[in-house]
Image 1 (cartoon, one colour):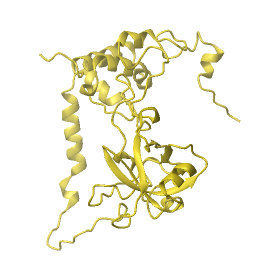
Image 2 (cartoon, rainbow, N blue to C red):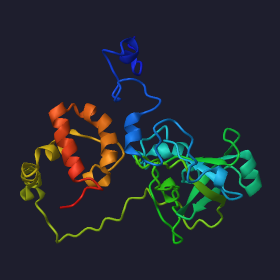
Image 3 (tube, one colour):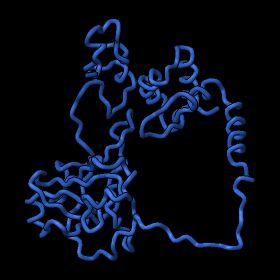
Image 4 (tube, one colour):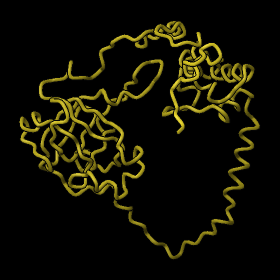
Length: 293
């Protein structure tokens, strides 16, 4: 039986298998992050008060967490029959504590509305003693269908989450730091229509020979022409480097942020020292805070 242990090689021989940190070791204090001097990303673990949490919520508000669904990947498969496994009245289910449900006159099977200054959504209540008072759990990934009031009739968490990044360095999502008002919803305008296919209008007079357009060949020519005009570092960046859950344009991050991102990006891309310098030079010249000529 094969077994995998995270950083197992490092544990066995830390000299031969160093980590991708500057020191090659596990760092409780990171001098590289300290050098970036990002106010909301200290170089060692430290508690920072979230933008939104129960500690600064108004009376009656709840903390909304948005975990990944166990039976789909983000919004993929949200329209499939797996949604019937847990949906309530056709909407995404939301776990509510027994105490909060009693205080707001909500029972399992009711529709509820979650709202804040960013938006509103309608979801289906599941009352449970497995979640703490003051917290509700609404899985992410639902498709959006807006009603006449601008509420998502499907239960899409994106309507109320904040776009504030987890830090100025990582720029990662902080969706689970979200506060909202909760109430029973008695004015839903229609069933959830997020997953109904659009109306297709047939036009008998319109005929098109798709093969004759030679779209694949044309796309290849455009790609070739674009890549041929790139400087070496630019070409390496777009061909070899990948990022997870974030934009991949140089202007999306500052030079300091790129220095942090590339610490893990370069090893994944398998770039040698010369290639790394070429890519980093390209990123620095085109970063958000680069000095324009």
